[in-house]
Image (cartoon, one colour):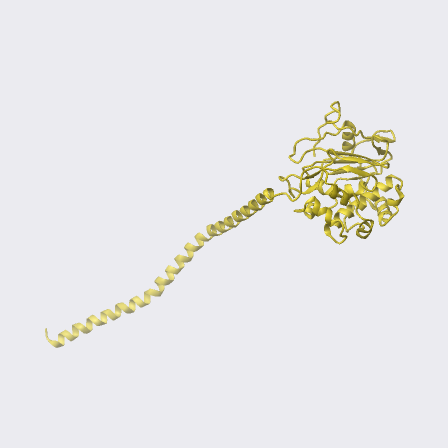
Length: 343
């Protein structure tokens, strides 16, 4: 082959290569664009499952956090104690200074008492106005209500025994420090106090209402605790404040705070106690005078008498003018009837 022919063959081959390269360069954007579209379509097909997986992971995480929190709350060592009367704690709770009671007033606590508008009076085993309490050792709401109730009752009488306990560790607000009225001792020249603790802190049956007490519970269609009846003039089926106020505090911690009128613990407990004191004064005809005429009690009493909402009775009551509740407990008298109570 001559040189001239060789150069022509080389030139022809080079032109073919250049033509192929140009054609490839024209086709490559389309190929890339098609590939990108395919990837987007595949991503769209995967995205719902990806979102579901992310949401599922978040929900599992929330469940784990709640489970860990619940476990820690239920297994955290109680701040309070279970045992006999602590004289120091009892002394501080039953002898709150008048200046504290006056300064706290209602403590910003809502009045939970309801007027019954009844024409008959609830009296106890000694014929005095009856303060009937129905609760349970396991109940955290009963736990906080007892603090206010003990302070109020101590203004009309004396607790010589008041064992300490804390609420169930399996309930909300576990291990709330409080007292129990089981094996407590109280005396008063003005009122009769009849408490019933229906369960122990492990939710086992404890004290059973007598038939007369069951009558009072049925009269107000009681299906929750704590329940309080003040001589059938006022009733309450809720605590004055939330148990969270007392969380992680021992009986000693709570008792020590009652000397500070600006403490939230004191405001809630004493505020509730002042409401109860005023209501009890209204059924004792303002006796004793040194309690019922001091500090904020007269003003609170007027608000309780005139501003409390009305509780409508659910069932008929006896025709006689006095409804008597027996103070007998089944552990004291085996002949007392067993009555099943639900709430």
